[in-house]
Length: 208
Image (tube, rainbow, N blue to C red; front, top):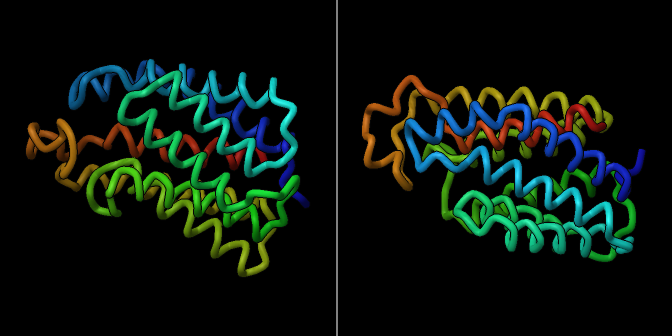
């Protein structure tokens, strides 16, 4: 099964819907341990990404993903908006010139998405950020594909690992942003960015 522009748009539709469904949760988490705008940022950002991709005539998936990232970045130039936008730009760069992706190229796309976020934010697993969900998710996806699983099975495994990564942030102290200021008050509460990361892989699992 090839990953096509239609799949990419379906993924954005699922992600946009999930951000909308979890808008209040993200607002509540971010109000307690951040600046409170995460739910608004992610719903607006993914809605813009979806709108752009649906209206674009671009058939090169690499260019489309990169342009989608730029559209998101302009709409929500906040920290998380910029990070997720950088993910799309990184993913697009990795598959430039392709109008459809093989299973291995789809895994590369989401690995590059995760790496794009990591490189922009300078964060690693264990830093209590979105990376704690994205990195395990993308690695599980790539491993599952390499082991011969289809896209659906790989996406389900990726979501499980992203969820586990999200849950692991309950035990982590923050190293970036306001989480540092709150110190050990963050313990026992999931990182709001990691929630976004897990929702991205949930959208992929729902899509494929």
